[in-house]
Amino acid sequence: MIPWLEANDPFPATSQALGPESEAPGLLAASGDLSLLRLQTAYPRGIFPWFSEGQPVLWWSTDPRMVLDTRRFALSRSLRKTIQKFRRTPGCTIRIDSAPERVLAHCALTPREGQNGTWILPPIRQTYLSWHRHWLASRQAGLAPNSGVHSVETWVDGELVGGLYGVNIGRMFYGESMFAHRTDASKIALAALVCLCRREGIDLIDCQQETAHLASLGAAPIARSDFEAHLSRVVPLAAPQDWSYDESTWAQLLPPA
Image 1 (cartoon, helix red, strand yellow):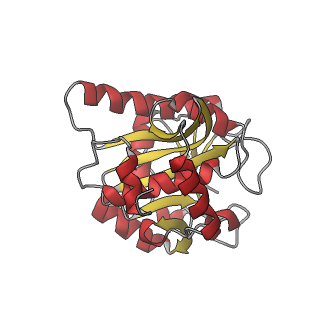
Image 2 (tube, helix red, strand yellow):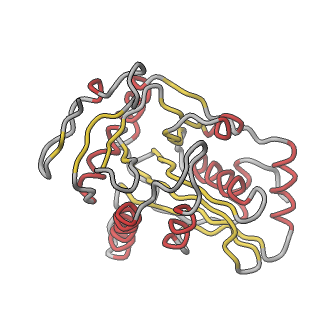
Image 3 (cartoon, one colour):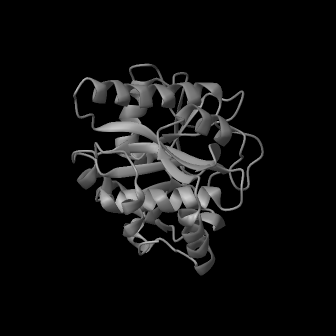
């Protein structure tokens, strides 16, 4: 049994999440709401939503937790060559937050590894875009928000061909989903995110689920207790305010083109 959360109910302790012997290891709670406030309460504790059509909102705290240490990103020789060619080719650019609605829409059409169908349902898209707009409005008002949703986008000749989105809180980035309409377009976006995180002093990117694809890029599982200890250190720190990208950012990973 897992608890049902009414609108004002707090999350239970993550230690109460279902264990590895269950059919849904990491499942912590269920609710009927997916409000922005609920998300902003969940992520600092390492809790995230993941559910399918016809299900209530399911909240998870997996153990172990798949994370990508940005200092250990696995840049293969082939990906290095792909990125170098991308950087040299006119019309190939990385953009940040220029089309988050389109990124989420494309990600919704891309099932997670080993899954059928999408988990990025309309309520997910609406709430995460609301979080991005809240961050943008705060910045335009001259404030320094400590959290927001951001997209990293791969563009070729004015066409959005790949990208990813995720949540930033303090000096932590939580990866949510990515898509590619051309070979390696999502990997290029992830490499760009790694560079941005290195530039801004973000050491870990949360990957939530353990997959072979993420492992091939350098992600590895860590104990939930270690993940939560890391969050307690970095979430209260001031979040980066410069979510922009230029050619010099690649220097965090590669020599000049």
